[in-house]
Amino acid sequence: MKAVLYMVIPCYNEEEVLPVTSGLFLEELQLLIEKEKISEESRILFVNDGSKDRTWEIIEGLARENPHFIGICQSRNRGHQNAVLAGLMEAKDVSDITISIDCDGQDDIATMEAMVDAYYDGAEVVYGVRSSRDTDTFFKRFTAQAFYKVLMRMGVETVYNHADYRLISARVLKEFAGFKEVNLFLRGMIPLVGFKSTSVFYERHERIAGESHYPLAKMVNLAIDGITSLSVKPLRLISGLGIGVSVLSFVGVLWAVITQICGRTVTGWASTVCVICFMGGVQLVCLGVLGEYIGKIYMEVKARPRYIISERTWTKQNEDEEKGE
Image (cartoon, rainbow, N blue to C red):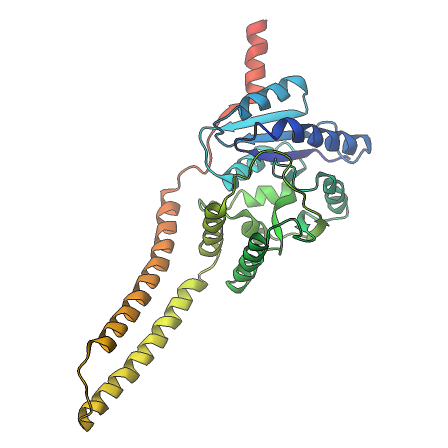
């Protein structure tokens, strides 16, 4: 039996690139259907993440022109990870497999066929992994590779050079639905579900049109979320740092007592200021890390919805048909 595939594509202010990449996604979907690797019931699901431009209008137009295009619209912008989650949860009960991919056309769309083949070979999760970072600037390549290495050292289970281009079976998604975290880092959460997984490698291209909506500040925030949401190692590092500073302080006390006894004490402000600045800096860093975790706990206990869908293209089409009748 051929699997029903849903491509989950988050979109935020993509009016420039969406008219181009939508055709590429449709070509790949039709190719897979023609090769009888997926069902005719397969769909391309766009998730509008509260765009401020004409993105949702374009998605509605695509849905009217071709039944393989469908879309959902979030009530407001909630971020890339929440948009991907919304699409996955929408698709989990109506598809056999999903493939999440960004809208900008940088990820190699043709790799989807290899992902589907890996699924038929028994893999429940197939990670799209970049084979190289030649198209990145030196700064982006260095920071990205450092990011993955830091995550691994912090005990976060991730796939090196993998972002959010992946195939997930409905079986995995139904288990993943039990994860209720508000602070999302999908590339670290999916491996926690388990099941058989594999990777396919591809070359990443330049963005087809428009500008990236993921600047340095957002990448830093994502890195912080990834570490603090899935690892307690920073807290343990603070404990170790506290022990180390305590030992140094104890040695300092012994040194002060001995010099006092020997009558070698010299009054001066420099050493005092250095010690105060050092201790103050250590305390502020530790408080900052603790505050990050407390903030995460604060958001989790509120248990607010991770996404709210305000519109669906098929609901609107049904309403229009009823009005026409």
